[in-house]
Image (cartoon, rainbow, N blue to C red; front, side, top):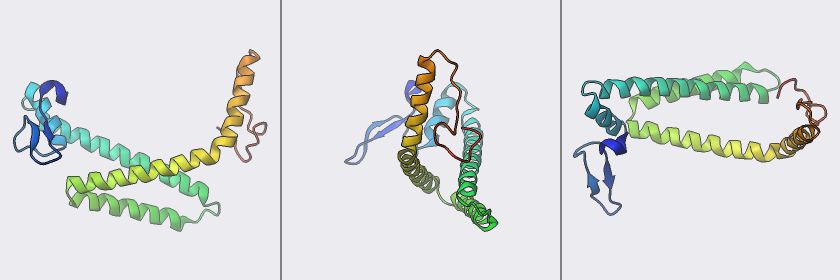
Length: 163
């Protein structure tokens, strides 16, 4: 949408602009606001603001759910202090992000997503052996003409009823 409407600027790494279609516009959501406003004049800023609100809210809730679920799994004893610390950290992070600049909030978000990606890569490496065993079992069942059924015990996975 931004490209089709031409509502963007392209920074030159050496300073200045290669393309300056929006003089004075800041990098970020303003490009989208201008693109929408070019077709729906009174809708751009409000639409982008509401969209970002819902995007941010659902993303924060999803990341919190994932973090609490993983933390609860790792804490076999069921201590509530770890979950409460996670909750306080989430509240602090959300508040901190709301009083800082949008650039700072996006930077913190990028750092968080990067950390999550590396943790997921490590988890994938740790899970490669059981995952390959399950994949091989699935392929063998398909080759035999069966409707594949997951069997955790057959794959050597303990303490699970779902996969």
